[in-house]
Length: 184
Image (cartoon, rainbow, N blue to C red; front, side, top):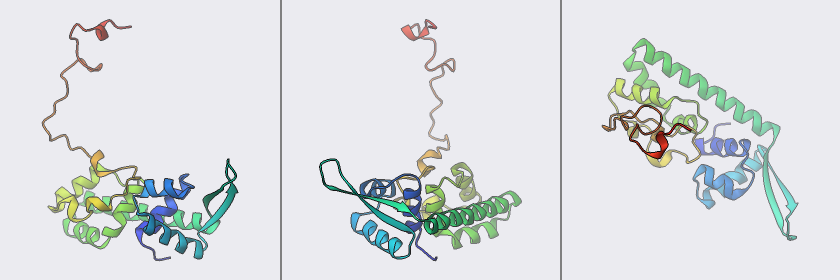
């Protein structure tokens, strides 16, 4: 299956417990039209099944579930992404700047999925960009980072913002004589 990363992200959202349209939409950040189109394609390919249930007040409730075929597809794609990530880490550790830059350029489309599934270490990813002298935004535009990503770019604080903490005792705020210093 040669799919857009968004298709795999939708499958992953369903696999991770998002069974309803609105929940999938909020986890993936897709527009309703785009999500509907993707869901139709996934259903046609046999990756998801639609289950209709009776709602609390007699209305119809629709839930989406992965089929075995859909679950296998997600597992396969995660495995492929893990292999690609491990290759990138090896290239970085070997100091092969040229190979790393070429590999990253050829695999840009996988980065959003790697973030969504929590495969990549964002600190390592940031360090790779430093090594090749590129900015992260040239490889992964901010609008392509799925809101459901377990490891979003904002988590990769490099600590260079000048914030040195509160200078306290390590117990949450310093010994300033306040009520929190009693020790209870």
